[in-house]
Amino acid sequence: MDETVRWTNLHPWEIAQRLLARYEIAVSRTVVRKLLHKHHYRRRRALKKQTLKTVPHRNEQFENIAGLIAEYEKAGNPIMSMDTKKKEYLGNFYRDGHLYTLEPLLTYDHDFTSLARGGHSSWSV
Image 1 (cartoon, rainbow, N blue to C red):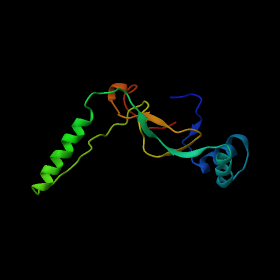
Image 2 (spheres, rainbow, N blue to C red):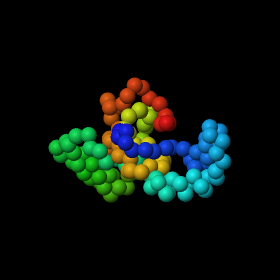
Image 3 (cartoon, helix red, strand yellow):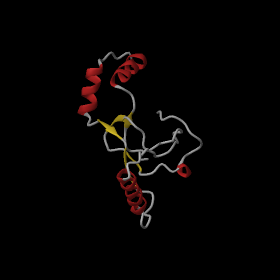
Image 4 (cartoon, rainbow, N blue to C red):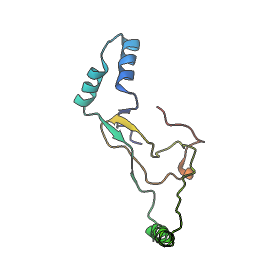
């Protein structure tokens, strides 16, 4: 997490509402959007780019799975994939959605629970 990167998960209409409530400044969400653009904020999605570690032969497990899938398909067997994750852990993990920010959002390429900070929670700032 880089403290110099500025970002918000607020929608332009939420920023407009907060400006009115806190500072009595009435602006439309269109004006907020234009100001975000003027100051080089862009809607961005978090990117899984930061590698935690280099593992020798890491790709072999994926090649093995691909081979098994091909073998099962050839035999006419059904193939199912399930994602059983439910918790959202706190930390530099990928989250679906977009934010306005000046720089790309880089997250770990794997969401290992050992890297989580204290339990689970939904993502909010």
